[in-house]
Amino acid sequence: MTASAGKPMTHEDQIRAIIFDWSDAVRAKDAARLVANLAPDARVFDLITPLQYVGAQTVRQRVEQWLSSFTGPLAYDVHQLRIAAGDDVAFCHSINSIKGQTKDGKAIDMAWRATVCFERISGQWYATHEHSSVPFDMTTGQASLDLKP
Amino acid sequence: MTASAGKPMTHEDQIRAIIFDWSDAVRAKDAARLVANLAPDARVFDLITPLQYVGAQTVRQRVEQWLSSFTGPLAYDVHQLRIAAGDDVAFCHSINSIKGQTKDGKAIDMAWRATVCFERISGQWYATHEHSSVPFDMTTGQASLDLKP
Image (cartoon, rainbow over all chains, first blue to last red; front, side, top):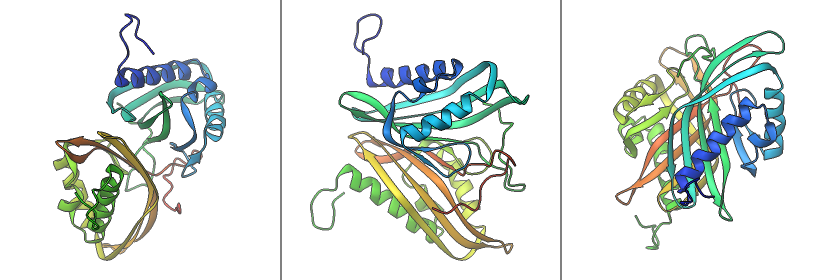
């Protein structure tokens, strides 16, 4: 991978490029692109039940279901992105927000916490673990779906 | 850090030792020990609101509040721990469970997803990011507090 100027991309640049590519994939509702850099045996902790998803194929089904629940354009943004990248292990975290309309007429405008953990396999970065969540309100037990980044 | 046999601990061993030490700290309700390997500027996404906590001091207050809400012994376990450790960056994820009694008489028996991200600073591993959560039920908006590992 090289940057446009021909200078080799740092590991951090490469991770950032994957995150930005995934953002484009969400806006384009392109599930295949959104799981392209996911390791085959990735373990994913998602916003909604169940406790975990194991394997890129299972995640892809979930992603397809999620993206196809929307109609019209999607506003998707990654805020407060921080990346720590070593030679073979990296992670990043951010607050992500989405705004759109579901096919059954619901307006979605929410933010969540995202952590993505990467390993470099045969010279290429793959996400082997993802964790997305919203916190809950201890008094009501309700998930906090109205948080702002 | 060396293992008992005198053989130097691998990075993975060192991360595992921190996780096990934290487990002992939870059972001992020792907040200071639980934040000992947390970086001063760590960003923590916790189970309950708000969206995030920034800084070890803020996290320590939250941890003290949490641990002091229990009375009697705490059963705490880390399940399905997986560690990926490079030379300077590492992460691990697991399903954690706790069982105990709160001071106001509530029986707690719950599991959550935990991701901890580490960086090696001056030869010592520190957690610079933590993410703990439960997923929520999309139909009710309720956090899932009855999940089993």
